[in-house]
Length: 419
Ligand SMILES: *Cc1c(COP(=O)(O)O)cnc(C)c1O
Image 1 (cartoon, helix red, strand yellow):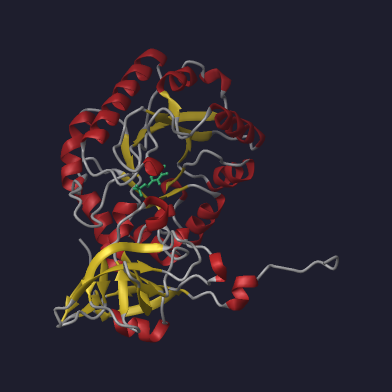
Image 2 (image 1 turned 120 degrees about the horizontal axis):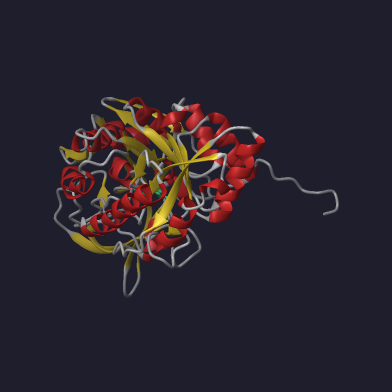
């Protein structure tokens, strides 16, 4: 579900013609639909309304301040993974009690900043991290709230780069070690062990891996509550909901709720969700202009001004993004293209072997479903400035991050006198 559609063969984002935006901001550019983002938050809220969960949007998927403000306005919280993300959360005035903090390598400074801000809890990923949080909380003379991220050892059946809940993954603590923590709470007098966290991976399209993991985790909580007289106040079920990039058939929010809510019937803890991709993927596109159509003996290349430095997913994960021309042609001629960028890497391919309408120099194409893990992974590789981000709401649009110019590109660089 998204708000990018053709009207009279012209691509629109909500009520704005995408070509009109490009005329104003140039190419390449990221364009986001406000409605698509907030509707995905609302779908989750509606599906789970019987249990009133806390929904913490996982901002690493798309952390533009305008997007964060929009989701916080919907009553959502934020899932953060760094001090920089905490800074963004503060900038949009996300209430501290709606922030959860994950990540395997939190530094002492990040931990201190988050404790001072009063976040809901840390999702702790190792025993040394737990020791460090204990140390910082003792120094600050307070109690830090902690959720233990358990690794349930299930296979989420997704790309290996985005599987996080198998035992060989760097994330989480295996159930045996986690139990050890609860059996020895005296070791952590400045920590309140109030929650369990479980995030098994990303772009998971079927319900089974979630059900399998959550049953294990629910049983684990029952066991530790009984054995060690602890009280778990929150169960954080992570993100990972799959979305449609081409012909996937992911479970809907409602199906997800039907699949998993029975597991938690009668449980006292509040559920927390950390959706990232589900909220943002379909809400954004990356528009590029065809610079050249290059024909070789074996292939046609549509060389566009957007590249792997703008959208890394195809190069990194072989990810599929649909390619939609901004102006749909009435001609029926079609050709097969590799859509590639100007970056000097053979891996700089945005879309491989796609049957598209015949393309011409100067035309625009949109890489669809680029709202998650798109702009946030952009780099300056090949000294390319990052593309701007534009937010559309109804018939209004605004640049919410400007294009990086050449000065920005070298900002902070110096040439030492000894050179
Ligand atoms: C990345 C991440 C998420 C979000 O994952 P999606 O697949 O984008 O929903 C949620 N929780 C944690 C801990 C993460 O690292």
